[in-house]
Length: 113
Length: 112
Image 1 (cartoon, chains in turn orange, green):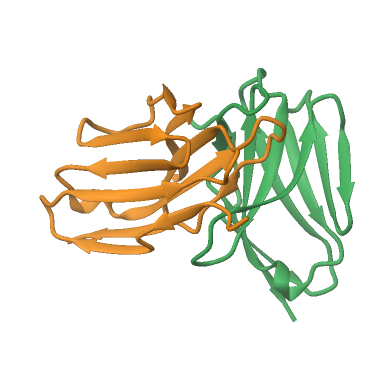
Image 2 (spheres, each protein chain N blue to C red):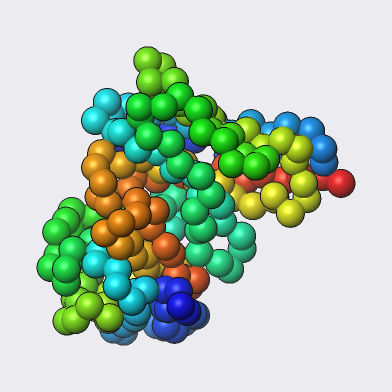
């Protein structure tokens, strides 16, 4: 298996622009998580899905952030409009029904200027 | 409020010696604990875990100890190797497959 796939790996955009991050979980995994990593706050959970349904979005910082999972093999995290304080590394992770450990993608490094 | 705390931002250890990384938690509902390792430009990778019904779990050079009364866990790496240099995250869960709460991470540097 290729593992969790994220795209793009790097994104540089200007303040006010829309940003869309993409994630393909491991085939067969039924839960998907979006995290943000910053120096100050470490790894923060933004939102997670179970069987494509959003379960907990309490970590989504503002209405500018939204996430979707239209099917079991694809999810997006959108920021509109983006701000410089959104600059961070965003990770996607997935987990199956038979294991507790989450498998992380390589992350997307977002820079908003 | 931080439910999982890693109070040491960094740790430096000589090759061959023991590395001890510490983690404290506040939520008594946590019943499963994990350690992840992260190299630069990569996602975190699972290292070792422990259920709250145990106080020790060992996997090769890595051992995790859990002290429930103190709400404290630690990761021991013996012997430490330069390739162990990475960021180590402690994480906790209150249910099977549920969301994880991560600590801020500890940067481990193993000097050769």
